[in-house]
Length: 419
Image (tube, rainbow, N blue to C red; front, side):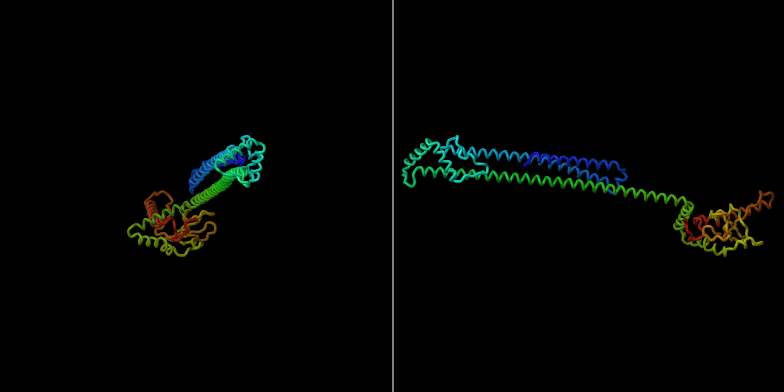
């Protein structure tokens, strides 16, 4: 295991943790820069805070993973140190076993054997007899000791099984036993080393995978967060533009139809009061009949402009200030004529054609208005003229003008209200 490279790679975990912290700070900064009235819509504020908390958890997991890798490398090094130490202890043990068999301490029969090396029985035997030939005095002592022990035990030696043969077999057996133990120790140590190395490598691969997955997740979440915020911002701007257009359109509508809106309010209040009044339905039907159907029937066919100008036609033209309710505001003022029987005729000021628009047409008067006297009364006849004018004017207001305003200045029941 290359600890230097592993530590360099592990440092990237701290970089990822710092990146998660930076992304979290950027998200919160973005949130704080957006108007609170916008972030309060559709839970945007809460959702960005949730992302911030998840980024904090991700930052904490990166730091924990970094500490875990450091801990793993430390344990890896400790395991390697222990294995090396145990290997040295094993060699020392074999040296002691060799000394106990009568071998000189300055001669190591295992010298030259590598960590993965192994001696056969013949090789061990050759090394032992080489030692005997080089150290014959010790060999003679050992043979004498073996002869004495054999004699004391009452054992006799045959031609085929002498003391040297017995000693050789015993020594070979001991060396074979030690060799087996040494190989077992090497196998166990190698297995432990391989297992530890495999576990560390697995941890490294898992850490790398987790780091990549976490980095991809951060990138994807951040992209999704930014895309969602941009989409919501664009949607909010679009909604604001739509509301602004609606407000402008509404303002223009009110500006252009303010009189009709006011009249509609008066009409709605009148109809509502008639609905809640005792017997209001019946009275309303009678009122609508007198104001619409009966007036149209009494006014009859509209005369032509020539007819009203004929001599003795009895039609009287009213001045402009008494014809304002019949003026459409286009071109010259409209011309209004009244008849003593209550009929009314209105002509276009430019074409002199009869006005048929329900909003400006002539309507029958139950009490006809009259022209004011020409001057201040100077005698009794003049006073009577003014009394007659006032009486007609008041009656006209009560029977014709007030009903016209109660229904919102409508001359026909189905008259269009707004332009």
